[in-house]
Length: 248
Image 1 (spheres, rainbow, N blue to C red):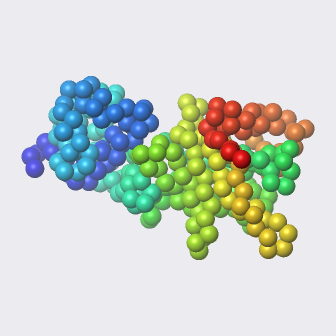
Image 2 (image 1 turned 135 degrees about the vertical axis):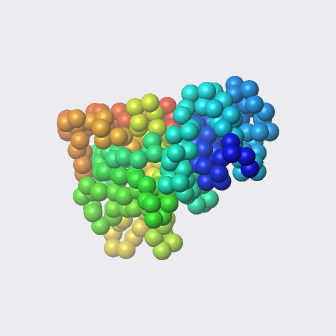
Image 3 (image 1 turned 90 degrees about the vertical axis):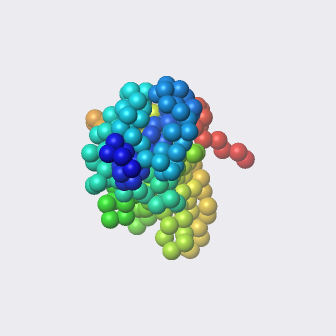
């Protein structure tokens, strides 16, 4: 390895960011190779770890993507740890845009005409070396969830996964829109009478809390609430665009 080659840790960190950018922008590796004026083979081998990036290659890719990859290089030692392969093998710099607090909206299971609202926090867990999520501000606090965040490069979707002793709850979300909201679907168990549990799925939206000023309301949001119209419009968009499809 020459002095201009990146270390294995630096290579993994930058490779993860490049794969994320290609997926987010829906660009092919061939497009990147053509724009950066380097061979597709060079990119393929560097992204797969077969051969490290050189400084010259990184500079050309930075110019092609208009993205400062060498900033990642200086952070590589402290932040190059990768999430497990089962969660997408991402690095923190590649998913830092996901970290934050989100107003979470879905239909109310007990009142189909209402909306249920709570808070979801997504952050990096250094001990686990991947993103985690935690819910709060739920009026049914005994059912609040936490778990792992999967960000695979192939599907282009984000998965919030709860696994409690083999019992799963799954949220599938689109990548964030320009204003940060993510649209998707939640599949979980609805609590009924006694010990009765029923599988249920419904559209769900996560919106950055910073997008709201005096329009934050948690718990059950009834049609007469001042924020109901805005919340309902967000949920309707999930189906009308559509971000999710419900097939009977």
